[in-house]
Image 1 (cartoon, protein in one colour):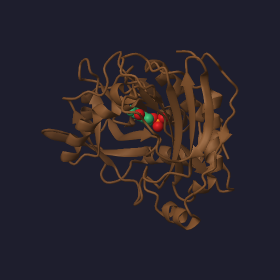
Image 2 (cartoon, protein in one colour):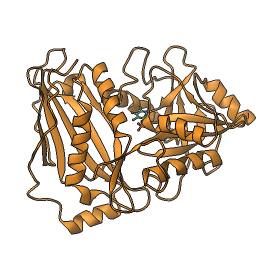
Image 3 (tube, protein in one colour):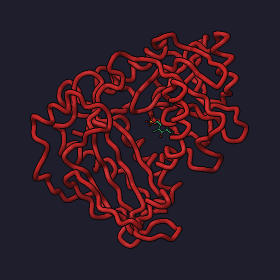
Image 4 (cartoon, helix red, strand yellow):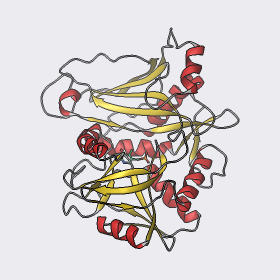
Length: 366
Ligand SMILES: *Cc1c(COP(=O)(O)O)cnc(C)c1O
């Protein structure tokens, strides 16, 4: 679906008359956790076929009123993004490659038959929200303000067709360091029974439905002491795809690092950045099909020396054991490997403004 109007980005502001008191906010920022507390404002915009994108506004954070027949509640026509605002030492606030999030949201919108939000609207909405709520950006350690732009079918109609009313919203939530007690490897459950995405499906789109289908296998993983699930391709059940919400990398003994190629994975911006950073650090980077046997045999033979997962929320996370009903393959004994940790450090230093930004990835938002 194309935009009928690419109106210039302007918005109205309705300040929150009752913001969270400063002492309470300080309390929250001292221990924010993840996704539990939200800032004083949210950003909204509406779309209809006649008017295109319109009614952009910064409003007090609060419940949305939804009719029980709102389309998204029935047919899951919904997409989202996730990115972080980082406070630098001089007090300025930055986002990491937000234009990539804008472009990915447009690709997700296309797949879900939702209208594409112009990039200047996406960037403008994030800047408006972070500037209004800049007092909510935590500083120190690996803290950030997590931004969650999303878009959903808001037409009140039970027929099955693309919604004729779409709502875009951005909310923000202070986030503590993902690993509070030092980086710890996650264990991964191999799901052979359940897939995440099929060929031609929505695996490459960032939509809520993909997460809904990952929850049962995730629950099974937890029963086996695993924090995450790895999904295989839906055709041959042989090639590694990704975790429920993170991409994978395999470090080899010759310094080559491999990330799986597939048309049904969500192509992470972190994954893409790591390919560049690793090349900068002297690694050969390959994107190719990578079978589950190559993982298990590689870890067993020592050909694969480290495995790590990556995504905006957890940045870079070492993988410990890969488990299945009658076995396991362990690739990390309690802490992250050298290559994993060097890549993690390089990425984090860049995001927090402690390293040069040779690729122009950081975008000042406040
Ligand atoms: C968001 C997401 C990722 C990670 O993408 P980043 O842009 O690196 O945050 C990986 N897999 C899935 C399924 C995702 O939804």
